Amino acid sequence: MNRPLIRLALPKGRAQKVVLAALAAGGGAFAGLDPQDRRLRVTLPEEGLELLFLKGWDVPRYVENGVADAGFVGSDVLDEHGCDLLVPLRLKEGRCRISLVGFPGTLPAAGGQVRLATKYPATARRVVAKRPWGAEVLELSGSIELAPILGLADLALDIVETGRTLKDNGLVELEPVAEVRPCLVVNRSSFLAHRFRINDLADRLESAGVAA
Image (tube, rainbow, N blue to C red; front, side):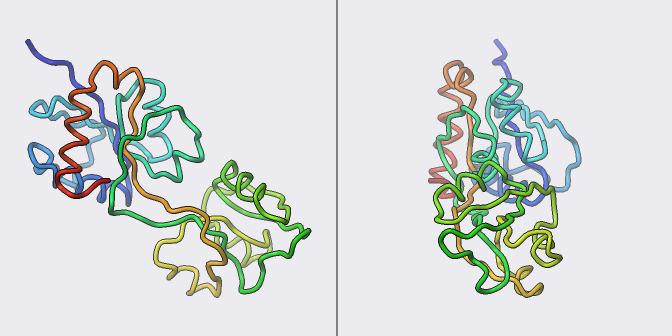
């Protein structure tokens, strides 16, 4: 009797390389995945999986709504969406951070008010709520660093990896806010239906030393 395929949503772009490398470390059919493959759906019958390649921002929605049973997504996206998903593990590679960035010395004093540009508005509001200063949050979709440079905002809340882009543009990382790592996320109903196979995937990643 053929077992049903589990759908696993993977992020495209920079995160895809990290996730595919982690899966390859787990062995089996994952080791044969081609990072250059442009197909959006790939079936691995040996693993009982159908892989869906999605924009990282869409992965939590596909998993939460049961279109995919599980997936990998950055914790920054997961925190911003606030989806109700299980998170059994996080990968060790692909770490970066969300930080407040701007020109040196531009963090406001207590009681101050600034404009804060970000593509993470929900996260930004949570961050500001814990600070002694207030902010008008401006939602942008890209090139967040340009907002303080061109005077649209006083500060930005954005992903920082090496800090090279900030340095090249005269900006600095003023305050790290949260570590970001790729996470395995699982639909709660799918976990009840496929817990042995999902746990097997998690165990393989942990045994390979690529997850914790």
